[in-house]
Amino acid sequence: MPTYRDEAVILRTHKLGEADRIVTMLSRHHGKVRAVAKGVRRTSSKFGARLEPFMVADVQLYQGRSLDIVQQAESLGSYGADIVAHYERFTSASAMVETADRLSDAEATSDQYLLLVGGLRALSRGEHAARSILDSYLLRVMSLGGWAPSLGDCARCGTPGPHTTFVVQLGGLVCTNCAPAGSPRLGATSLGLLHSLMRGEWDAVDAASHADTATASGLVAAYAQWHLERGIRSLAHVSDIPGGAR
Image 1 (cartoon, rainbow, N blue to C red):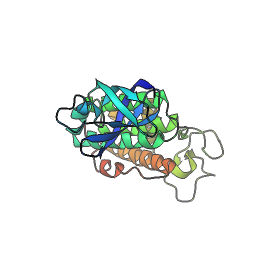
Image 2: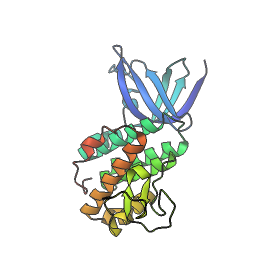
Image 3: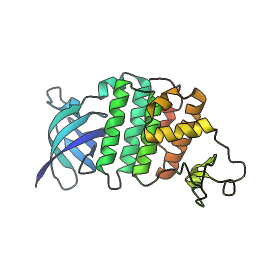
Image 4: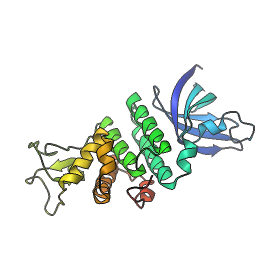
């Protein structure tokens, strides 16, 4: 059986036997990979700490029939310690890797890997509010997966914007003719924040009010979960975090 090498983000792990772990990774070139890391739960393990969630590693794997085998692992990004030390970073990172795990059930791309690495790096450094990093990641990774929300023309009939009604089930902003009765309207500043989150315009994101941040976060969470067709369990813990927490 051949071996191969790739960069990978560790998404999750679970125990196998007395000393092994099954490690689920999002790799740069091979999509989602599930592999057995033998002996990593022993204190003498040389690379156990490099195969924890939120870490980025250069891994060498032996290709197996159902599960690959981790042969080597070298650290590329030690983000885990700085993330788990802060509750708001930890819960946001958990939602990010859970989303990546769901999306990469389909064919993953290098762009999805790079976006996740960038998000985890920003969280570990506390560059912006943790929830804003998560919201930006969710919008952008959904776009990479082919589910970009319409933030200009009507998502249903294509009528040119601007529009002010965001309907998750219809794919984003919709015109007054397409909006279901009673649909809430977005203010200009909340709509502007969604655009900034999508584009990574961090000066505007960091300057947003708590009310606009909360509105945008609610829409982003609902949109992502609707299109994934399953709830993102970690988001239940993120929702109580103040908008400015880092």
